[in-house]
Length: 217
Image: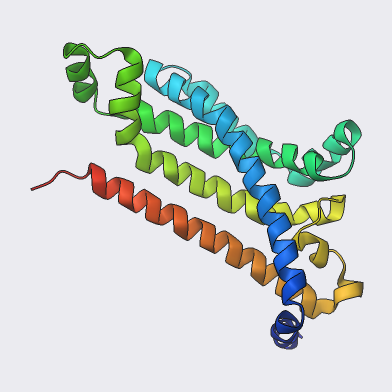
């Protein structure tokens, strides 16, 4: 049955390319909006806590809490506050995206070589300059790793939005009666492809950042 469903999925794709592209665009819009908001919240906080070498328990606590919160429960709670639709799902995804970004940003900055930081202070750099010119560039690879984890998690979880009026590829996956099992598998494959493409792009950025920070001989 699984094999036949995959065959049906590959038959479904060429006949519904426009539908899949539209729904993939909705999923990407939802996921990337959530990631952008999560970055605006978690990045400054993680940078500040890491630079101050404080808030380890907060970073670890937020990380543990984020992993333990069920996505469906968050979206269900949001329905009572924001109703069904885009923003209800976005808020739930923001809550899920913040922990890996915050945790990795904190450790990226906090783990920078103290000697490099003290040398920068000795040269007269301000705390803001130390953060932006020393700690952030050196910690960028680990920061990008946290963003990559959050992106994959959010894109995969965004499929739940189809159940709660958020549209996207999850809408196809939630309507097997309309699109058939082949449509469900096709949408799932497109979700996986979107997640893999995003992860690959961020992995390349992380590799480039690591290569830039590597000592030159």
